[in-house]
Amino acid sequence: MAQRDYFEKDYYAALGVSKDATQAEVSKAYRKLARDLHPDARPDDPTAEARFKEVSEAHAVLSNPEKRKEYDEVRQLAGSGMFGGAGPGGGAGGFPGGFPRGSTRTAGGGQVFDLGDLLGDMFTQGGGPGAPSGGRARRGAGPRRGRDVETDLTLSFADAMAGVTTTLRVTGQATCSTCFGSGAKPGTSPVPCQTCGGQGSIARDQGLFSFSEPCPTCAGRGTQIPDPCPTCGGTGAEQRVRTIRARIPAGVRDGARIRLKGKGEAGLNGGPSGDLYVRVHVDEDALFGRSGDQLTLRVPITFSEAALGTRLRVPTLDDPVTLKIPAGTESGRTFRVKGRGAPRAGGGRGDLLVTVDLVVPRKLNRTQRKLLEEFAETEETGVRDHLEAAMSKGA
Image 1 (cartoon, rainbow, N blue to C red):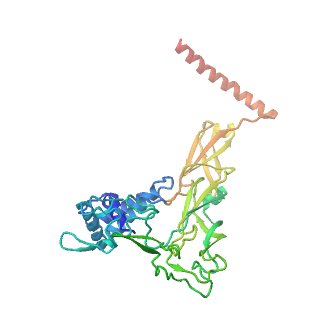
Image 2: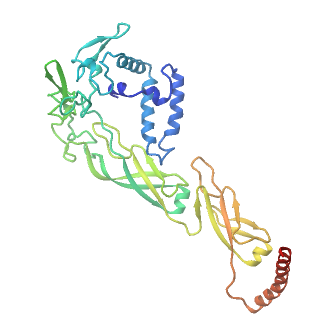
Image 3: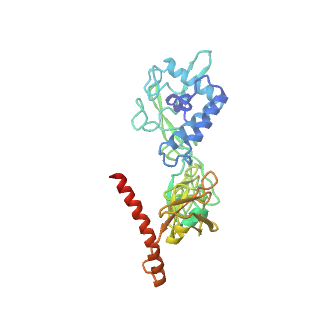
């Protein structure tokens, strides 16, 4: 991490702690924020990952006593006016590009700082006011993280409920299969750049000032490759199709976005790989619907079953269960079968909601019609009596 960040970023504010906070308080604040902001906990929040990285960076500095001491001292110098009121993007000590390389200043307590080193990373390419034309580059390219990649995966409803290990085919930049990322022909190795001595940058003296710029020979990498790899041409990466084995958790929902850390494109100069994000699409099922962690199911019943009551065997994700339908059940009534719904991310399962639909027969045989007509006579009398009583009361 560049020391420029020490000027620009308030790590105490990022963690929500005071400057006098103990190490235990810093760790406690970080754990709470990391748990709340982790991208896996907030897959639909685009700002969560950025905030998660911010608090992780703050914790990496403040949890280390030496780094915290250095950070506090740099912030104290910036606030003391020693840099001519310069904070982020300003010139140090009234110089637009900072103090000349190798200058020293004494802070309170007599400690000496080499401000040439301290401010060496302050202005990056395309930096703030006072940077020379073309910007000022960092001392060497350094490792670069690979790009994140997204892909789509379609699952059957049964596989989504049970969880599945599947193979993904991803096309993009991957670590070269010949040189394994070194960029050099097999049997050879990269060598330090002779122009910059492996630093990746060279100094240009302009009067009192010394400006740093990328090495024109190695383009800032700090190394040269005398014999480039024939497969990747010295880049260390190649465009190819990769097969990735991925475990999809049980109960995954349609539209879910799953992060596979380190499975994205290969990094450069020894940098880490990016992440792979899998967008999951789940096919509809012929029997079950879904509402959150609950599964839904509609089951037909006959008039006699609804009137007299019955026991129905209904399917679940596992074995069928017997559901008791009480006498007098109306069409559209929903029954709950606990623990037979979709698997939950934290363990356990939701419920199965079974809705009964009354089915009216379209054709009746002679016996059925006669019996139903006899029943209708008694039913009609009862209904009319109830209706007449209600009308009389209303009158």
